[in-house]
Image 1 (tube, rainbow, N blue to C red):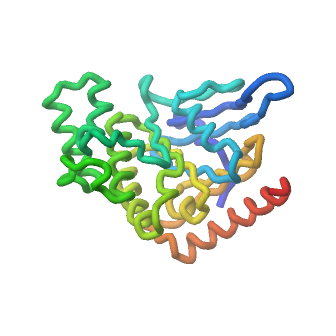
Image 2 (cartoon, one colour; image 1 turned 60 degrees about the vertical axis):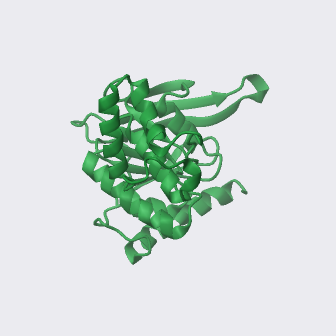
Length: 260
């Protein structure tokens, strides 16, 4: 395993953070959330961010998504202006809309014609194995199915970069395991670049090409390791467990250093 946070110089990163700092508030009340974070995500790479609560993982995703601006440094996302889609832990579906209508919303905002929207929604629902559920309302679906709808809606943005903020954290272990398989399939088929935040180190070892560990506030990159386990992987495999144990040891050391 190697420790690196950059892509080869000949490859243009899908996401590049250069000395990114984020401060909330001013004066004596100022809180330094991120401090000098530099990170490249290569095209097609799956990177997982782990760290203690409050270390700035979600803040980093918001900066990449363009929902917030850094206080210092630069954030660059390759491609068009809308190059990163963000999926949250909660599905945040509109309860009065059908599954199909929820997925259609980004397509409406992009101004796609009605016929094209209908065709695209059908394709997206098939992608997440919900082709027969377009007419249902969110309350009629299980938690895992609602997350699939949220994923389809994010994919409707048609961005090359997928940002995921603990999307499976509230799900039971079996549903989460199934969605790991689904996400890995979609990531591979669509050749997406993924930046995935999780508190679950096993989940990170199961999914990632590379795991990045952030320090407790302020968030700094303190460890990076490449996961060279062949795919497909099982979350309960000995190889995944070994990677998870190594990262967990470093995370415990960091948490203990701050007395959390």
